[in-house]
Length: 197
Image (cartoon, rainbow, N blue to C red; front, side, top):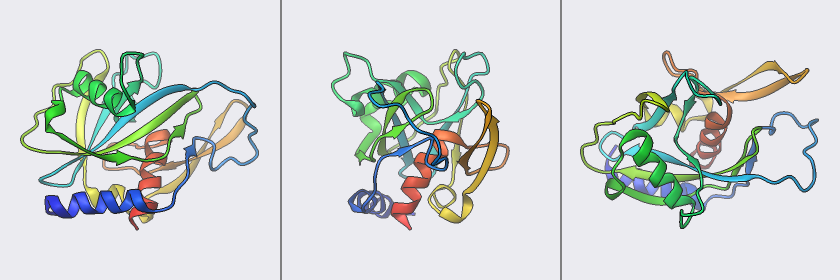
């Protein structure tokens, strides 16, 4: 895939109709409380310009929340962050050593609400030039890549479920080799795949 093609595909995806998503999309019987306060957060959905591969992380097993899970680089938006994009770039620099000057921001998808009370802004981006990840040991155990076609094709996604809070909860997955990509990460990717298809 050439860089101009990758950029055009992502730009076109942002012009398509789409709405905000949640971790509860496949669980219509769950009623979310009115007036709930969500914590702003942002993630960098970053594709390499040369290969089109998506950059993902495996969270440290020592973390209190979501240990060992697959995630985008990103996190809570700090008061000093000028925007969700600034938060995503800062977090990617802290977590995986990605220099913000290498990142071409394409735009943002609608927000995603998580079961843990976050409103995540997914920031689509292309990473230019050589990039050797430097995982932040306290947060990230591994940085890896997944081919563009795998995470942007709805056929590669499936719905699975598990028992959670006394009920069966369903969610999207898009496994890749030894990596079990699920939850908010898979749901955000599914929203992108729907716009690209």
